[in-house]
Structure formats: C-alpha cells, structure tokens
Image (cartoon, rainbow, N blue to C red; front, top):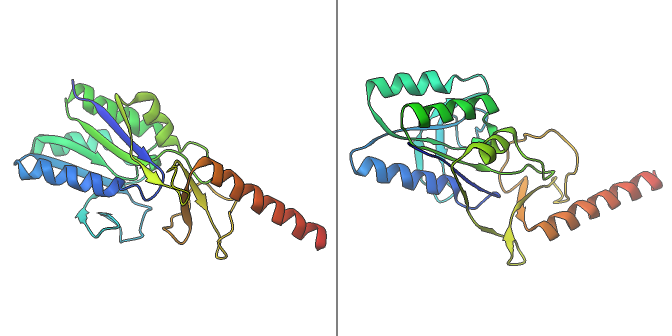
Length: 204
C-alpha cells in the first residue's frame, strides 16, 4: 500500500526545493508525476511551484473546493502516475486530505505533501492538522532561528518589523511578512508587541 508523507516546517526550510528535487528524480527515471499547489499563493505567479533558490515547475492549482480525488483519478487513467506531490499543503481542507488517503490506499499512488505546520499565532492549519492525523510518515524539515536554534514558528511582522498578533489566519507573504523563529524568540516577539500596543492605548 502506498503512503502519505507530510514534510512540514517553518518558513524558509526548503520545502518547495525538496518537492522539486523529488519531482525531478521521478521524471528522470521516466516516471509520471502530478504536482499541485494552492491557487491563492500567487507570490511567483499562479500555477507554479517556485523555490527561493530559483527552481520552478508548473503545477495544477487547488482551492478548498477542488475535487482532488476526481482530478487525480482522471489523470491516472490517462497516464499512470508514480507519485502525486502537493505544495502549500497547509491550505488543503480535511476532506481533501481524506481524498488523498483514498488515492494512496485504493490507487496505490504515493502522496508527498509539503507545508507549514502552524500559522502566525501557533495554531494548526486545517490541512496540516488533518495530515498530522492521517499521514503515514511525518518528516520535519529544519530551518534556523537567528539565535542558531531550530525554528519551528512563523512570526508575522508589520512594515516596521514588529510582531502582528491579530488577524486572519491566511495572509500570503514572504520574508517581508514572516520570520522563522524558535519558540522562545517567537513568544518574546509577540509579548513585546502586545506590551507596545498596551502602552500605545494608555498614552492615547
């Protein structure tokens, strides 16, 4: 039986690069793959998986409404797939993760998912929560905080570089909006930002 793999990390750990390398390895051996990415991530243009080191590949786009089971099954009928790869997997819905489980179990196609574990408030994304519960293999990709410790958190910052502690869960951005940090410095940055906001209210 094929497996679902969830490769997770904070930002800037090389998730997209790892996906693109895996895709290349399959195709170099003459095997067919199908690559997906979230439609809402348009930092480098929609319909592409792009790494920070310049690698790029076309990809199918998914939204929360995309029928992944139907789309992948149809593609598999036309060209037998050796692997399906999902970038920005944190944006999958739980139902879509269940569909991917059916693909692995019933069509025997390995599923490689790459994404963030938590958002800027240290809460799980829906797709990540479902994958943590359903994936056969969990692999943490490592990134480094400015202090040298492993970064596990994604701090959202404003234009002045101060931590943003409120807002919607999904806000697309790169290094201008997010900083990968260890838990200690993530918590300190959010506490400092909350204290600054409280002082501003008192002086208003």
